Length: 81
Image (tube, rainbow, N blue to C red; front, side):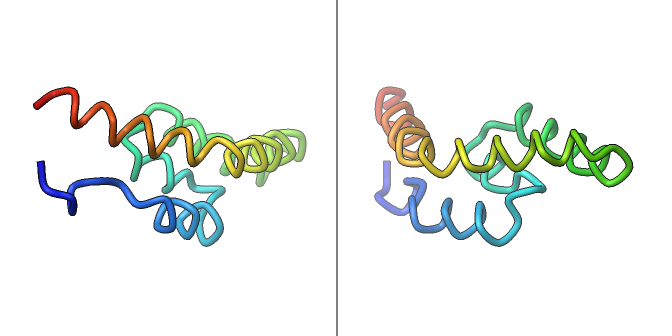
């Protein structure tokens, strides 16, 4: 496995900060189902305020979980070799 295949924590944080409510950082880390949930909740939050509050809380939690997610994805890739 090449070092360039690893997911980068800085990129994950950039995606979280720049387009977090769309869940792009989750797609980057291969967490596609929760990424889709982010998109659904964000768009439903436009019409239903409590949903956007839930997205905001989830984003705050992700700020602290991102290092663990990146390490997990990179470790999993190495275990497949």
